[in-house]
Image (cartoon, rainbow, N blue to C red):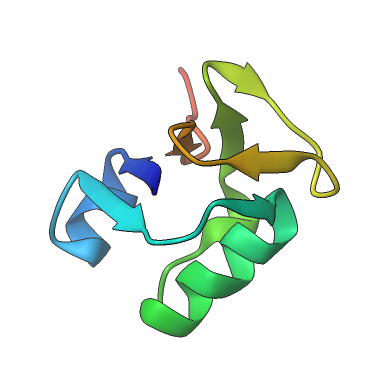
Length: 77
């Protein structure tokens, strides 16, 4: 299983901070596409994606027991 964490507005849209995907290996892009199907209003394309606390590219591979985090853009002032 791949564990997915959502923060801020993403957590509010999904309704939970944690979600699991029952797959053993996916690319980062496949994770995004899977989540878009599960939660059509989830703006994952605008969020930063990290795997095991490191930012990743869409071609990077996510494996079972990895922790994927989606962090929405933050504005400062």
